[in-house]
Image 1 (cartoon, helix red, strand yellow):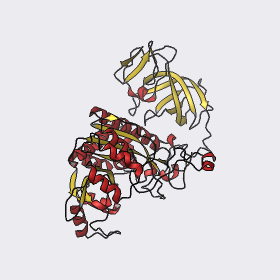
Image 2 (cartoon, rainbow, N blue to C red):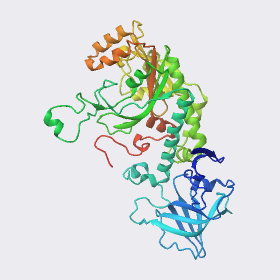
Image 3 (cartoon, rainbow, N blue to C red):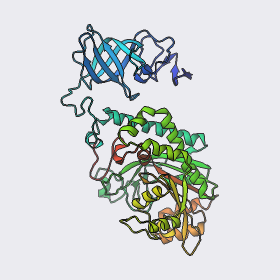
Image 4 (cartoon, helix red, strand yellow):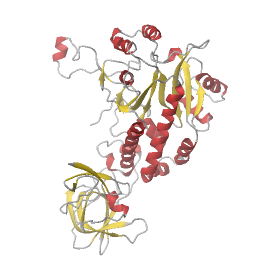
Length: 485
């Protein structure tokens, strides 16, 4: 039987007394240890006298009596120092080599580290020619440079830190929703719907010519990669009061700017039995702050690398966002602020037009570099599902965007139109085809007032870490004219 065993430094799944995770085994024949655990300096009851470390060499420094190696396995930003005596052969070990090292952990005499490894044996697993290797030892490479090597950039300090933070933020997202009673829904990647109505879709068809010859669609209807899981989440609010999804979304937007990707990740949530935008806004704010607190506490060294070397001053900006309640403006108030500004905008702020990025960033600055909600947008610029406020003379819908420093729009949400007569009118007005008949039926059988939002995961990481280009916060960026790997 499987059972959970906790050792103070984290739980692990064990079977028949053997541990297979967290870098260590109870079996005397397997003394493998992760670098992060070795560096922790914590007492390890029953630890084998000889341990095994696997990873990649980050530096080699030969002296008269000893050779010092630094090994990293991706479990932490800091590498473990290895001391190799003359009898240990390290002649073929170079920067970037994959190795396996056996030795004894001892207390380090150096103040910067608790532990070091006295090597008994160093085994070369994968060689690396440091001359041909595009990343050089002790050299800080720019994001633009390492972006040229998507198959290798995970080996750099900066990108490995990014990936740990991204992994932690992903885990924190799921924890937030689970801890607050949300049900995780796996929404489809292939869909026949255009949720946003913008038409920026990737159509899905088989690569073979068979379907083309038959003049039929594989799914009998035109099908696309999803731009949002929202409509499928709305279906689920007919049986669950709180649901969320977290997965990839796709937009065929012909843009290569630092703000756009063709494939990106979205966090989306829907709440049933809600008739107030404040309910949606509260979840947005708490989600942002909870994830951020979590990664700051669990990955302090990784986050500090960005705040110190990539975006000086970002630490104070993040602290300001976490300490203060988010501000709230109506769309009308936002337009008034923009029109009274002395700023020279490229796009004229005018009631009835959507806010541009330059407007969004100005509004955040106007509010003291604190995230700001802008709510109640004009009826004509929001999608068919946004709930009609039935107000006047300026007709609006119950929609809200969350604007954050350095980015602009991070989240977009709304109350959804649950009144069937108004929904049908809206669908007809937008020229929505009969393929949305199912969406009408959802509102015929026990429908309730509901609302939700979506948050761009990559934009969130940019906001917290201070990274300018969205292509630098995703492992394998996809954008117009670029699909490497």
